[in-house]
Length: 139
Image 1 (cartoon, rainbow, N blue to C red):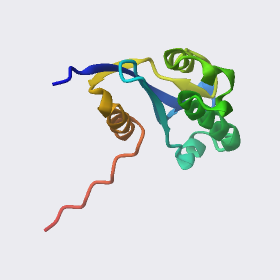
Image 2 (cartoon, rainbow, N blue to C red; image 1 turned 120 degrees about the vertical axis):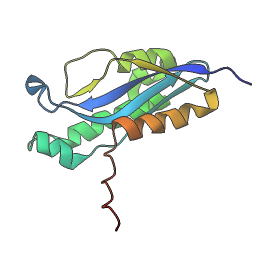
Image 3 (cartoon, helix red, strand yellow; image 1 turned 180 degrees about the horizontal axis):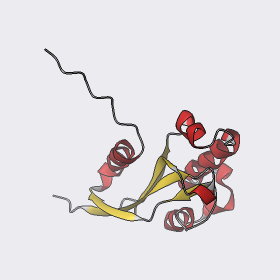
């Protein structure tokens, strides 16, 4: 049996007006060093963002969120940061900053290396996606 691996993750947030300190969770960045895993999952709910700031620049937000995915994947579209070792990319992406795109503090969890992608989706469901509407009671 394979021992559990430690992974680190941070929630990606869009903060349309930093002075108001309001944000919506839009994604997760997850890194599992032992498995060599670094991936971001992003799901922008534009209606929720526009509810916080009707003048939010959606094109800019989309562009920055795509850059996070590209940097994690090591794609050329991620620029020079995407060419760094994956742990350096994770630390660069999760560094504190005051901008429209921010991340939560880094948290840790346990999984087996093969389950890192599953852990990413589990965190997305718990922290980013809207909960399903409750079903009406049946009679």
